[in-house]
Length: 101
Length: 316
Length: 164
Image (tube, rainbow over all chains, first blue to last red; front, side, top):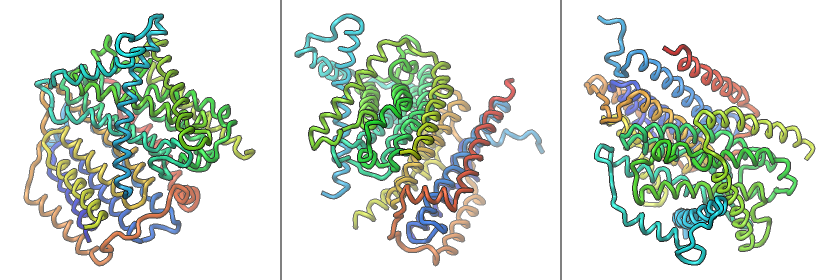
């Protein structure tokens, strides 16, 4: 129960961060919080006895795959943020619209 | 004592070991540098100048604690510790004696490789919190250099994981054979160069060069805060020397108890003197040469070594 | 108050406070440090549950990779050595409702499924991981490698493409 509350609490915290933050890098940081908390729940469930796959080492393998995906997504996201910042000279979400109205 | 208490004790011991290593390391560096430059090093204080570093430390402790007015004070103060702590952590997985490593995990090799990655955060924060353009540039360059050289450093230790079939340092010591040394010689060269570059030493110390960037990312650090950065640097060098001595020179060579430890320390001293020698012999590398070496020379060399091991393993 | 529950409580507190700092901090560097604390706490959880390899990979990749990337991006984008730029947040009721609603929905739905306490821990080590990756999860492993290669090329194209 405490595992669930902490993990889902962090997940909703990250979601709240995505909804309220007005800066691109801060939104990416909130996405990382969501990903981290989801991985935590995954590994916590496996530690509590839920089998993750056919093989015994599948839980750590799944965790490694999730971390790899998160790192790939962070890399592309940050590259896009830098590219956007170069073009628009700002990273504030409110000012980043080309189509107004 | 419970495992947690032993762990805390070993962590404290690691911090002390780094302090002692820095003291002896600085003395050794000044002596070796002196001999290379055809002069004698420090010789006034104590026999052979051994107390010189102690006197310097006393001077540093008594200096005024200056924090730049524009700096972000809390992060400014934490950054040296973030650089120092992982280096202390990396001392505990080295197998010092037969069957004894302070932290005996099944993933010891990965631990030693992964932990200095945390120091990069400290370097970046140190440069950023000084609010000083040159410090920030120095921090960026130092961080880019450190993460670039992590790759060949990690790849160079993989041959031993393949040869022994385990990531646990004690298992590798059990399986160690003397003819692994010529087999993994390319990996040794890659490891030696990458370790020197990883701790921002030797010909790779552009980010902290006094004549280039006014000491780069620790420009605004004085007294003991600067000493913590230096301890991290010497500590990293000593840890790299110990680790290299364990795998490429045979470590404690299966000598019992304390003899093994003395053997290991002797080998590590040889490696450390080699690293100091390299620093005072070669001119400083430019940033583009630095990055080019990591990506275009050392990583392919490490991969070639892996291919060699992969081809040879079925016959072992 | 056993040692286990103390460790769990400490890790939980560090994780949650790291998350709170990440989401609510107005200063960029504070947010980065909050994220760092959160990631360290997650790595601590992994090691505490027995998945040592995963914990160290978390340290290596997330803190030594993703967090470093993020700080690099912050330094390249918020390039002002004088005074740190502040991040604005627009708190509104709808966001609270969405996040809170999601929390209650998921907790209520999964409450019967998730066990109360984490007893067993993970006993598999690098050897089992190795067998898994070269066995049933070989496709995952290879696709992961292809994905990372694609990301490498994509980042070079996005950032290096045409210099204006």
